[in-house]
Amino acid sequence: MKKVAVERSLQNVKDYLTQSGYQVEALEDKRYQLDSFDAVVVSGQDTNFLGMQETWVKKSVISAHGRTAEEVKKELDQRIMS
Image 1: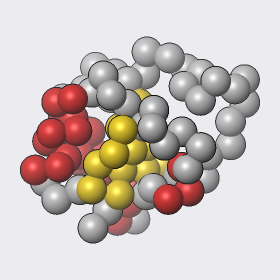
Image 2: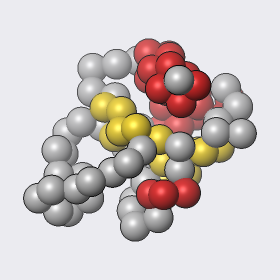
Image 3: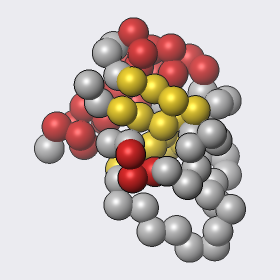
């Protein structure tokens, strides 16, 4: 099962991904444990989501800004499966 961290404000995305078989956890609770996730979904509202000027994340970071939950899942599927 793919494990994804999602910002709390994206409840619709969290619900959809959970129903689609993803293991979803709140990003705010896991900010410093990103290595345990396959990807991270952010709202796109805060470009500095980890509280640092420069952050090197080796996982896929997907912005949900302006996207439906279905579009976010489609991009997750493409990035994680590639």
